Length: 285
Image 1 (spheres, rainbow, N blue to C red):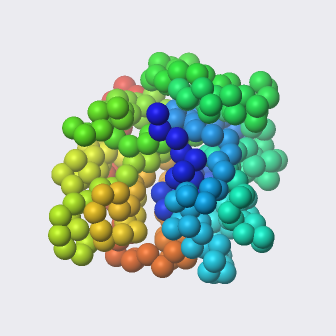
Image 2: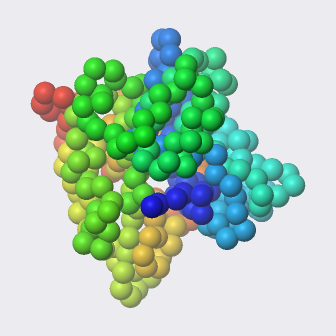
């Protein structure tokens, strides 16, 4: 079973969490009452930064560099994991804790619905949140879970997408169905490459996944941190209010610059003709 502890704080988290915080902060500014957060692949509330983890290539780069940011979302994210005594032996928050802390900073009431199938993850989530703060569901999420209660923001963060070699991962078509019933949602997934060249060419399944998201009416932000093969970057596909989209992109651009990633490998794409898929049909902007 997939366990994010080893990957916590890696390059994918460096992209995902500032983007999540930026989008959520923009939505909180327009939110009355509780901020309703939902996460279909919740993961741990806290992840140990282990000696054999992937964090040295992610948050470890920023921890060592001393580079500063002028982006509020990036700074907020960084404050929650930075440790002056060194990162090894510390903890890196999960997505739900980042949103909880953001709500506290904004004076918003926090409520979450979290799904995960790992008994260890579910046990930790239940220990981290009280029943008033979060509903923990020890099963896979379903589109029907959002038929009646709509979250302020939904994060869809699978460990990967189904391919011929990764049949245990969810199918993209199933994940895209959530965008039919939720107004503000983000989907994270990896970019994969293989073959020669610098950068190595993206795999066909990876390219196809991006095309399917755009065709579905989603905006897509792509970040590649390596010219090599296998998992070399990640994507965010999202349906968000315009201000939240702008803030997400600004945070991604900022953190990619702090990491000294190639700026040509950071792209933001709009869907063809800016069609937005809505429950019950589509409409143009």
